[in-house]
Structure formats: C-alpha cells, structure tokens
Length: 305
Ligand SMILES: C[S@@+](CC[C@H](N)C(=O)[O-])C[C@H]1O[C@@H](n2cnc3c(N)ncnc32)[C@H](O)[C@@H]1O
Image (cartoon, rainbow, N blue to C red; front, top):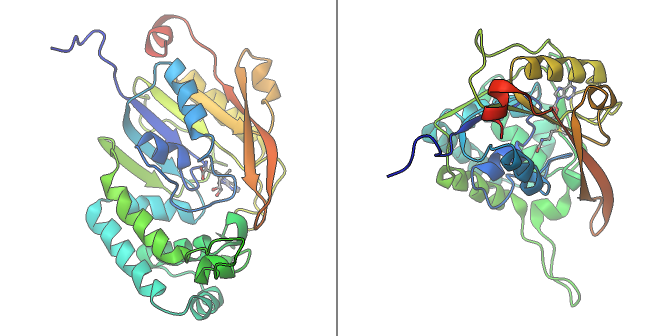
C-alpha cells in the first residue's frame, strides 16, 4: 500500500509562452514533437525535466498553456478532448488530400479564418511546411498570415538519390502526430488560452495551488519573428517571473543568457548545450540558459525539495 506521506504528488505546469509546448508534450510521454517550431524546446525537454525533478516535480497533474499567437487557439482546441482533436485531424486530412502548393497559395491569400478549428488546421498546415520550422504568425486584426515560405521537400518529399534516402512528405506525418496525442498521459486538467504575456501576470484564482511550476520561454530578447513585429520586453518577463515566484510558484525561464536581475536576487542558472537545424543539412550549436527561482524556506522547501 502506498505511503501517502511519501508518495509523489503531482505538480501543475503553466507555460505562458507555450508555442508548440514541447516540454509539456515530453512530460506527457510524447516520443516526438508535434512539428518543428522556431525556438521549440523538444531537444532540451529531457534536461529541463531533470531540473524539475531535482525540485521534486515529477508527476504532471495539471497543465495550462497560453500563447498570444495561433498556438493559443491550437491548444485550446486540442485540450477540449478527443472529439475536437478528431475534428481537427479530419480538417487537416482534407487539406492534405489537395495539392500542397495550391493549398498553401490559397490559404496565405485569404484572411485567417474566424472558426477556431479551421484556423488551427490552417496554421498547423502552414507551420508544417515552413522552412526550418520558422514561426508562422499573424498580423494585428484584421488577421492575415505571416509565413516564412514553403518548404517543397516537406510538402512533396524528395526523391532518393545514391547518396541520400528519400524524405517522405510531412503533411501525412502531421496527421499521424496529431492522432498519437490521444495515447499520451493526459494530466487530470488541461486548459489553454490566447493570453499575451505582456499583461501583468495574475494568479489563476485568488491563490495558486501548491506545487505550481511556471515555465517561461519568451522569444529571445530583442527578436521579432513570432507575431507580427511584437517584441516581449525583458522587463515584462522579469516582472511576471517575480510575481509568480512571490505567489509561491517555482519559476523557470529559458533564454540565451541567465536573467541578470534575477541572478542578482539569488536565482540560479543552468547552462544547456543545444543544437538547432539551420537549413537542409546544417546545424548550429548554441547555449540555452534556464534561470530558476530559488529554494525557499518553510512551506516552499517542503513543496519543492
Ligand atoms: C521561444 S517560443 C516558445 C517555444 C516553446 N517553448 C516550444 O517548445 O515550442 C516563444 C513563444 O512566445 C510567444 N509570445 C508570447 N508573448 C509574445 C510577445 N509579446 N511577442 C511575441 N511572441 C510572444 C510566441 O508566440 C512564441 O510561441
């Protein structure tokens, strides 16, 4: 019989810059990412999970994802359950049956659809065909797609040569990945929203539940390329991180450098070596830093190791 005093207890994960939510999917037992997405944390997810485990956070009991871009809509839909996921998969399957180039050209010329399922299906289609996974975003309302182009080999596959094997078309593979979502370890609660991280962080209720983890993965400082030309300021990231920490959450921030004002306040930083695909065959090495809120005395110490 399990001892309730020592049995591991679940933790709640908030991802306010969720994007493709690679960390969440990894923690839910996924064996691959949904699709390539600029800045996604799929390759780093095992290391980030280790950092969480060091603080006693192993079992995911609840997830809340937010992103002001199209991912906010995608996760809201996917989180609604099997029926909505199936509806989304059917819509993508319909897009996949048409010629990818013609479908791409039609979609980018039309405004973003109002219907969330149609919007999510079109976004996933465009993102799957984006060269090197560069982010597909949208303009301020009235929304139009902002894409980085059309990757022919993702769309059609390439013929095998003597030196290289063929690459299979990626759109049917996207459908497979969506279907596999049903087999993941879904936490008891899964929700999502299209919130912007710009706004002051606020607790989901008047208090935050025990064992809350916030994983903040903002666009790299000073970069654009996600939503129109929007830039998320370092001040907003630091302010919101401090607020969550004050409420008792364990906060992790993923960036290209340790977050200096938080390091000065006693946070710790873990350096992770990463590699990113830059083109057809190229990879570049880079450092990612996870800045983590400090162990706290009293209740927090018991909660987080
Ligand atoms: C580095 S990506 C996150 C990648 C994600 N962890 C993953 O595994 O796919 C940063 C995300 O922050 C979102 N974001 C949040 N607030 C933003 C803002 N004010 N401006 C631009 N992007 C913002 C973007 O839409 C983007 O999906």
